[in-house]
Image (tube, rainbow, N blue to C red; front, top):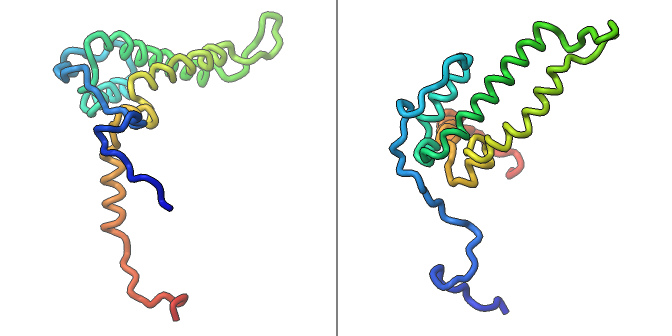
Length: 160
């Protein structure tokens, strides 16, 4: 026996897929949140791309400090990584002995809080999926690959 028929959706008590509730009205733009002076050019570009993405519609005004904090952390990490590259991974210690560059530990310590902010604001693939935002580029790429795939016209030898 197959069991009882499923209930209509409006009568179900459990729904594992929460609906996306947009609390922001989508009125904030890049003009309302300009990039900070001193950010590297690649971060300024990423900031603009963020504001051009569907994620920008979910940003409320009280989210701006956290977003700025995430990009400030990215800028600090980029600056420290540049210094590590310039100075090297091994530096001279207090008594002249070779030691690991102390900036390495600082960068590693910043990755955890940065990842938490990125998850909070939908900057990772998993957090985008949780927010119900799909990657339009990925869908377009798949469609393009299918459209440009070569058509095999020969008979499958396994069916012979």
